[in-house]
Each structure stands twice: as C-alpha cells, then as structure tokens.
Length: 142
Image (cartoon, rainbow, N blue to C red; front, side, top):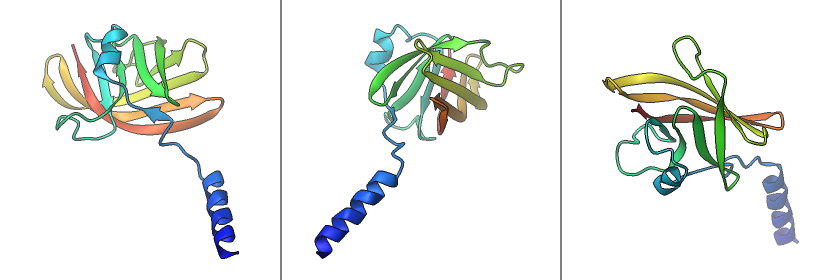
C-alpha cells in the first residue's frame, strides 16, 4: 500500500512539473557547417565560461539565419525585421512555419577586437503564446 501511494504521488509530481530543460537542445559545429552558417555570426552557450573547453552550443546565427535545436528537432529561423544594433535593441528570428519565434537580446560584455566581441543576454522562445527565456553567453565575430 505504501509503495503504491509513493508511486502515485511521484507520478502526480512528474505530471505537474514543467519540463523546460529538454526543450532547448545543443547543436554541433557540423550542423552549423551543413547549414552553411559557418562564416561571420553569433554563437551562444548556456555557460559564461564558454571559452574553456567545448560547451554545448545553444544557438548560432549568421546575422540573417539562426539555427537551434527545439524539442529535439533542428530548426532554422530567419531574421524578421532589423538586425540588432544601437538603434534596434533586439533581433527577432522566426521559423519557416511561423510556429517558433526567438527574440535575441544581447549586449557586448567585452570587445576583443574590431570584429570580435563577447556577448551576454537572453533568448526568449515563444510558441503558441507561451514563452521561455534562456540566459546565454557567447561571441559575435566576423
């Protein structure tokens, strides 16, 4: 009786707990190359010490096209509107079917050269009216 009750309580907790960690997966350098996005662009990670080792890549874009893994599927998104600049504080990317919208809000944390900067900020992913924000760190380079 106690075992049945413990299993039931565990199952109820599992059903009512949102599972968001698995919605945003990592992408590989190979996938970035295959999508022909391996030139200038922004690469974002979940960890601020991304320069140490090889942390999983959450997002990569070439300033026009973005690439990420969402619910296990590799998704390509296209820039909608203006690219982030001092005038436009965010960039917004949309999937081909319009089902997924990614709002990229980044700021430069350190300039490493004329065309290389460390960045930090958030990716806000919106699908069917619900949003999830992920804190990200990375580099923008050309």
